Length: 234
Image (cartoon, rainbow, N blue to C red; front, side, top):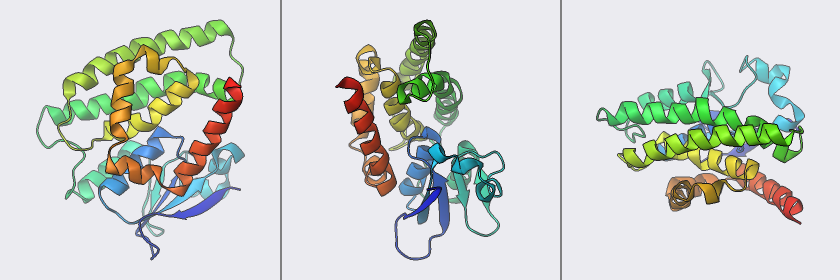
């Protein structure tokens, strides 16, 4: 199955279509931003395992074949998660996710982008290894974990120093999904970084996270990963 249409906030004609996959922290950012800003949307589940993102009908909308993609079904097709986020932040300023004051605004942006472009890609192979898609030698796994440890140590210190200048910021959204992927790829992550685990647990109290997590697409993926983890630990 390539695309599954799943409604967003209402059953009427939606203003936007979000093409995404819940396992992607980048898709999660846009999903959370739409919820935070109370924007009506329809979630289009892109089945990455079947290669739906590389099919012609999707490439016509998103030429690089990546999720997320935000479309209004007419003349607007925005890809690249941060570009979509900036569009939503500027177009719907009633609820801001970036702090208005400097330097918090710049620091929030830079730390979120460091997570998105530096930390998340560094453990992609380890994540695929956990899924059984590829096989990594033990030495390669250890090198990836070493790199992750160094990057997460820096991220943890910066995130704790930043505090929470807004109720819900883009770092919160990206980290929510990224941390779950990291702990799946490296189960000891929560023990090695208890402060980041506490941060993750605190996010579960957010109404925005709760709304995103209640979405059928997200629930479907959560159940899928529970099955993998159960089989792995049996």
